[in-house]
Amino acid sequence: MLKKLTKADMLLRDRLYGVGWFLHQMVEQGNYGAFLLKVSGSQTSRRIEELEDGSWIVEVDVRSRRRPADIIATHLVREIRFEIASTDAQGESRIDCYRLWTDLMDCRIDPAKTLIGLYQQRWEHEGSCREMKLELKKHKHLSAQLLETAHIEILSMVWASALIAKERQRLASINGSSETARRVGFDVVQENMCVLWPLQSQVGIHLSQAQFEASAQSLSHHASLYNTPQKRKRSCPRKVRQNQKHWPKIRERTESKQPVKITILGHH
Image (cartoon, rainbow, N blue to C red; front, side, top):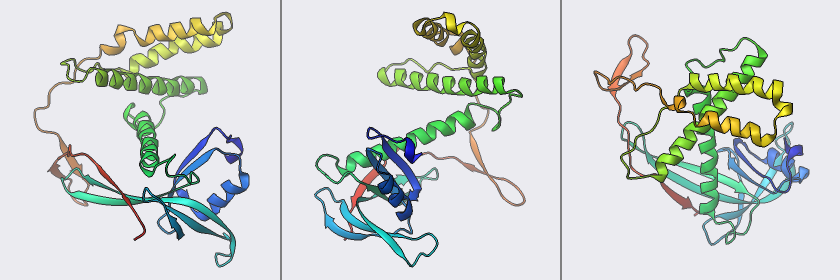
C-alpha cells in the first residue's frame, strides 16, 4: 500500500498503525503527502515543544520488532491529544481519550481542530462501509453463486449506498420542510444493475461514456426505486435484546440527542 501512495495523498489509519515501526516504514518509504494516525494506547513518546493549539512536537523511539530493547530509529511527529464526551444509548455519559500523530507540523496552517474533524470524517466512511455490508442485505454473506452475479450484487450494494447518501443530502438541503424521506428498495436496485451489467459488457464498446452515464442516471431517477411500501406500525415499542446465558433480557432503548463535545488536551 505504501508503494502506491503519491505526494498528493494523505494516509489516515487507525490505532493498529499508530506505532513506531509503521511510522518508521512510512518515513523510509517517503512517497506520501501527509499522514494522520490514531496512536495505540501502549505507544510512548517524549514531548519536545508545545504548540499554540495545544498539540505537541514529540519524539518517538522505534524499537526492533525482534528485539524490543533495541532502538533502531527516532522520529519527530506532531501529537494531538483530545477527549470526546458523549452519551450512550442508556443515557450515561462517557469520556474517551484519543491521540493522533501527523507530520503536519505547522499548527497555524493545520490546526488541531481541523485534523480531529478530518479523522472523524474517516469514521463516517467506516460507518458507510458497515451500513453497506451489514444493513443493506438480509444476510452477512453474498447470495450470488457465480462470479459474475457476485459482481452485480456488490455493485448493487455500492449503488444503493450512493442513492441513500444522495437522499440524505436532499433531505438536509430542505431542512424544516414537511417532506419525508423516500424509500430505496435494494431488490429494485439489483434488478437495474442486472440491466446495466450486460449493457456495459455486451454493447459497452458501442456506447460513449456520456451515453452510458445517461442510462445509469435514468435508472437512478426511476420512480420505481422509491416505491417500496411503508413498513407497518409497531404494536409495541422497539426493544433491545441483551444476550444472557439462560434467557434474553428485554430493556427500554434510550437514545441521546445531546451533541458530542470534543476537548483538546495537553501533556500537563
